Length: 391
Image 1 (cartoon, one colour):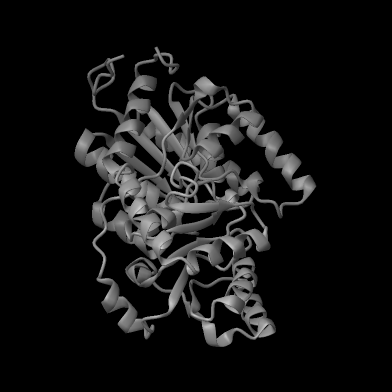
Image 2 (tube, rainbow, N blue to C red):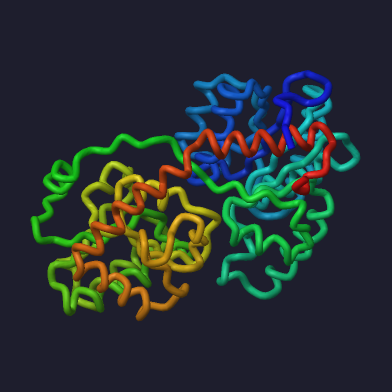
């Protein structure tokens, strides 16, 4: 089926992005999406965003780009402030409209966007970037409440955009129909990285060090403590192994205590919060022990750096990682299996190199224009009022 570039009215598509979590992966996704929607597709984009959790990158981008935007304080947690936010967004849509599409990002942004559009002609797109109920540490009562909310809101959703097949499958438990879901994986621009030798010299690595790298928040979601526990097993039989962890967060103290408990401080380096991407060429293996994810950008970056991957199934990266080809996927929260996978790669340079080259080849399929074009296609179909099921 051929898709026209513009709605049937022949006016440019007009889209309002609603973003509460304007930071990290969600913020990056919105930045990349908006940039190319404007540059490549001529979309008239407006942005409603919350400064509360916005990082410096997102705030600076909004200021530089100069697109129409409405900073609006939104709380991460449900509360009476949400009623105010919904009312103000409805006013904005009416004042600046008419809009073809409102696109809500993350659980809170998605909920507020959908509720704000009730009773309007605006089509609503929702990208969860990992449903909040995927968090295994969420208590049973909260899980029931948030699940019930997603079930109600599913009926107010024109289209859900899942960033991974796993997220698409998970969405169906809330009543989203398969025809209501589009799978559009996160994609990235080509990355220019420094040479491996320069990075390793800067970090003081020896030639025989086999470096396992981690980049992420030291938080329950990313499970950094499990990585330290697995590494303690790896280094027993592979003294050349070295663990480099980049990031910070509430679990930093527990990570340090775990390193001390296993007596592996000489083989673990904690660099704190700094840019991880420029250091990736100095790694030999990339490890991600996450409990849950949408589709993490950090894995795409590691693939661009030509790294073999050891990740958990909870990272939801089956679309990126072909088992045994460019990485190893192990069960979530299984320290023993994670340690075995790391040991396999630490002790086998040939396999590491082959998987690293496979990562570089595979990541070329995930180029940013593809992601933006597929999202624009969803918008156009909705704006033209056509059925989204394949013809």
